[in-house]
Length: 275
Image 1: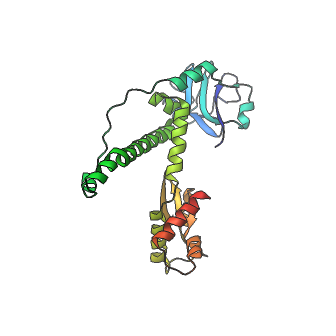
Image 2: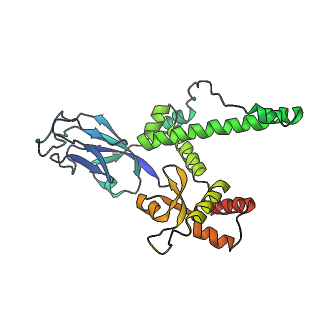
Image 3: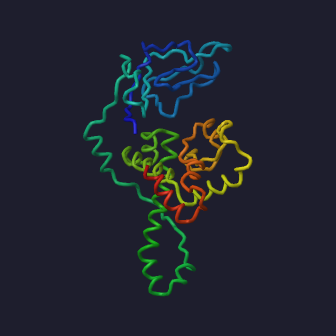
């Protein structure tokens, strides 16, 4: 994972041209006035920590952000190696050890009760002894995993929308806690399962007579799209910038003319996830 920092930009005297409709740093549009009399909107990683933008700026034909005297923006999740950090009007925000320790030691907020459905019909089929053991161990552990996965997904969604620091503020937890949950969510959702392998195989067989591998990358793949694994055409994944995790042609090569069994699907999923 690329190391990131939080930076403050003093727009007063910076390279920014106040006659422009946008403020551009770190490859992002941090501030934008779409029309002369509309308020300036900020990127989800940017926060106004000093000053305020004028209520209007520029002309009707050429809107502008306008006067930026005494305005300071704080920007989170900036790549630590980004060249814009060399700008003399940009400084890094460094948390003191006391602040970091306070964040790490901050108690988790009180949580509302969480209810997870227990499949009692399945437990009844086990017999009383096995059902008791499953209910007191396996079922509890599975419930904890489900709740943890749900919390990880929420943290991931907020981090995408507001950055890791903003998500931490929303949830009332440390930034490190949000980062850990984001990593767990990515690892969990990018793991290929035997069902994914079977679905890829079925889609490949269903379209094998219609697709031409040599033409426009027309073959089926497993791709990571918007936080989930989907089966699609390779060129569709390319067009949308999705990460291709596994190809139907790699699967064909692995099977070498044999039928796909449940054991094959399990083994293949493990091999792909370990790469």
